[in-house]
Amino acid sequence: MDKIIVGLKRVVDYNVRVQVKSDGSGVETDGVKMSINPFDEIALEEALRIKERGEASEVIAVSIGSTEAQQQLRTGLAMGADRAILVEADGDIDPLSIARTFQHLAEKENAGLVLLGKQAIDGDNNQIPQMLSASWGRPQATFASGVEINGNTARVVREVDAGLETIEVDLPAVISVDLRLNEARYVKLPDIMKAKKKPLDVVALAELGIEAGPQIKELSYAPPEERQRGIMVDDTAALVAVLKDKGLV
Image 1 (tube, one colour):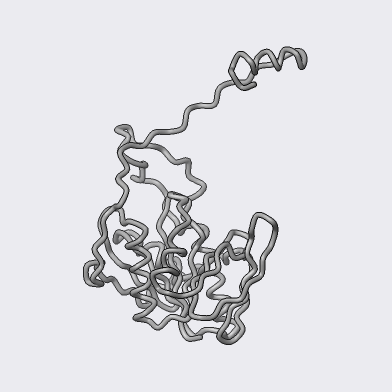
Image 2 (tube, helix red, strand yellow; image 1 turned 90 degrees about the vertical axis):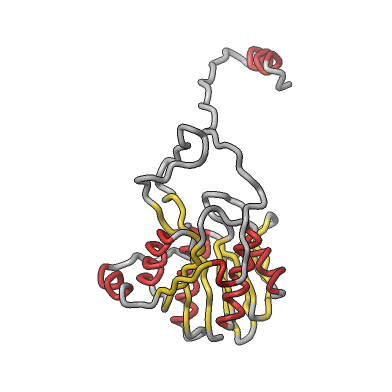
């Protein structure tokens, strides 16, 4: 296998408490720490391990979004990616356009594998890998907790409701990863300095011939209601009475 493409999305760091803007128009991001989507970070770690085993020759990190995403791509380069591509686009992009963008790059780079996080922690949609597989016409293996490359096939251990499922897919393929696949490496200062010299190409979404527009329009945002305090009851009969008053039984 020659190349692996890994998607990296810029999201609010998972340690940050998300705040809704006062006008309800979106999530507050000014002055907020932004990071690589955790699932995508695990996907990149797996790609690097595959390359280190000699089963791939190049790892390409790709992000789709604003110019600020270069920060996350530089982090990916510091982790060990060979080069990065930023597909620059303004505003929100619908999932199908994102999938088509990955398809365009996979075909252009003649990628043998596309590794993606199973979902992003901001939208939690879990749909890009499946859409990419369908549009690219390649097999998919989702929710991977184990990946083994054997020549022109990949053996993937999937986490399903009943437990673990092992499947084999022919390469090229799309694999989406779960949290238990691995633990991403820490970035060291020397690697950060080296990453500044690695190539990071910027291309406009329109140059790829892809027209993006949100298929679903988000009208407003609102924080979840505050949790109400619980009450204490003396016995089971009192508990049943309270549940009946609330219409729960």
